[in-house]
Image (cartoon, rainbow, N blue to C red; front, side):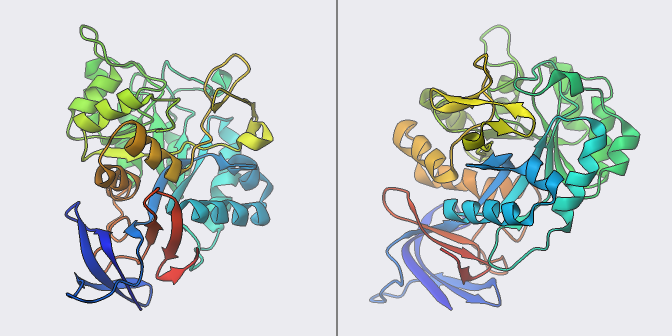
Length: 366
């Protein structure tokens, strides 16, 4: 099968008139579109989106689905993701009692990877080993890292968000990195030394930049400042215009265009809950009753529109942040980019950045 377009985002970060030859679910070759050759689509082609932080979508909650072993709801999540152009994702479990994670992790791990459905990278544990900025997480379950628990739960977990200032954070980073789990610093107000120590111990990402962390101040820099100025870490961002306003989104991309990662941090906002956390929609985002932000209702295409139309981020940078950069930080060498040998995961967008076509492993699914 051949897909071709006049605007194809390739690995050099530029748009090209190109033809993509696909065989057995992977990209066999990419070549320049021949002079006089008509493209097969007028859409903008980019790598399928990779969302590293999905707590739920619309009316389906990841925690509840996993604990209930609800395969019907799981299929609905996957289909909603495809509607957004997301072809790889991390089901995200927020802070809860230590003894309930195993069942949820096992459920996710045991779901078969089906051709034509989004690829599950693995579980993202956002907690319970958080720092001094718990945000909407239930603080009664926030605790210090437990090495035995981490070792016992490493299988199936690919990403963990933890606080750099908690006792045992460095040891946890080392243990997780040794087990192939990526570490992100988040919900945290560390000192510079604590941040540096965790990065040296293996942390490579910062979770939802500016939110639930110390920030950018001209005399008292915090986690957000260090994330933007350290080339060894990527920074994820919820670009809904509420968690981070457009001017600050522009600042983040200007500081770190090659290490920005768009995440939705989406929750099942329509149900009024995220796991056991009750929430309400208010002023464009899900919140606790006291107004604390509790995840988002944004989709990846909507985040792109905020970045491009409101923050004036170049489209190529926004698309790379939605696909290539999250794949890079997770070590996914065969996803998140349009390159020979990679899985043929693509999204086709119109000029308004609406998702018009999606291919998962070479199969047209939208």
